[in-house]
Each structure stands twice: as C-alpha cells, then as structure tokens.
Amino acid sequence: LKPSSNLQRQTQQRLKLSSNLQKQTQQRLKLSSNLQRQTLQRLKPSSNLQRQTQQRLKLSSNLQKQTQQRLKLSSNLQRQTQQRLKLSSNLQKQTQQRLKLSSNLQRQTQQRLKLSSNLQRQTQQRLKLSSNLQKQTQQQLKPSSNLQRQTQQRLKLSSNLQRQTQQRLK
Image (cartoon, rainbow, N blue to C red; front, side, top):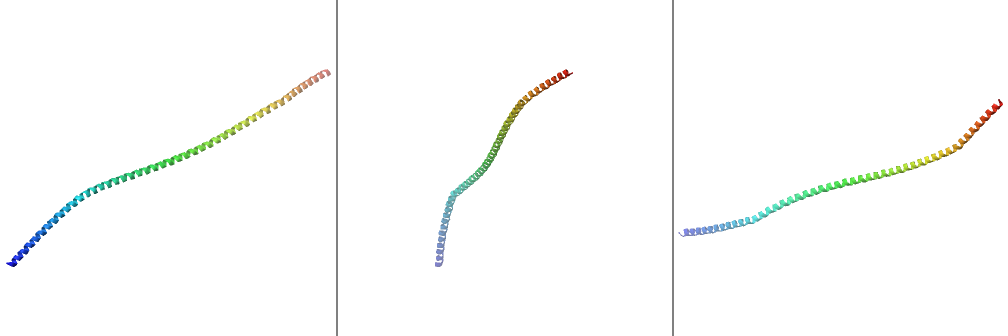
C-alpha cells in the first residue's frame, strides 16, 4: 500500500502542477488577449492617422496637379504673350518701313516739284526773252517799213515824172 500511496501523492502533485500550469497558461492567454486588445486600440488611432495621411496625400496630389495645370496655363499665356509681342514688333517694323518709304516718296515729290518750278521759271524766262526778241524785231522792222514806204513813194514820183516826160516828148 505504501508504494501505491506514493504514486497517488505524486499523481496529485502532478495534477496540482498541471492545474497551476493551466492557470498560468490561462493568465498568459488573458494577458495576451489584453495585449492584443491594447495593440488593436493603439493600431486604431494609427489606422485613423494613416487614413488622414492618405487623404492629405490625395489632397496634396490634387493640389500638385492643379499647380501643374496652372503652370501649364501660365506657360501657354506667356508663349501667347511672346507671340503677340513678336507680332507687335513686326507690325512696328513694317510701320517704320512704310513711314520711311512715305518720307522718301515725299522727298522725291518735293524734288520733282522743285524741278518743275525751275522748269517753269526757265520757261517763263524763255518766253520773256522771246517776247523781248519779238519786240526788238518789230522795232527793227519798223524803220525798214518806213524806208520801204519812202522808196515806193520815190518810185511812184519817178514813174509820174517819167510819164510826164514822155507826154512832153510826144
């Protein structure tokens, strides 16, 4: 009976140890469950923070896209402004060339008017000379006409005298 009592005592000790071990295991499981719950609670704010961070990243991405679109629009506007300035510069150059051509044409017209005025003055001088020459010619022809009239009168007298002489001789 003594060995059987020893075996029973050892079995009870083992059962006691097993019960203690079971209690410790349950305590550890309880601690693990608590730790898991605490970890979940800690992860929940982290999840919220992660979701907020993703929303902020999304907003930042949208803002970046809008900024890129604005930069693209600004670049297009700048390119259009440069094209307009280039067109304005070309128009200004054309206007200056036209003004230069107009000035040259005006100068040529003034030179032609000056030449025409000189030609007109020369023509008037020639007409004046021609008129003077005509007057001089008329004045020169006037004594010749008087002389011619006197000669005709003398010839007429001579003819009359000759006729009278013939009559007397007859």
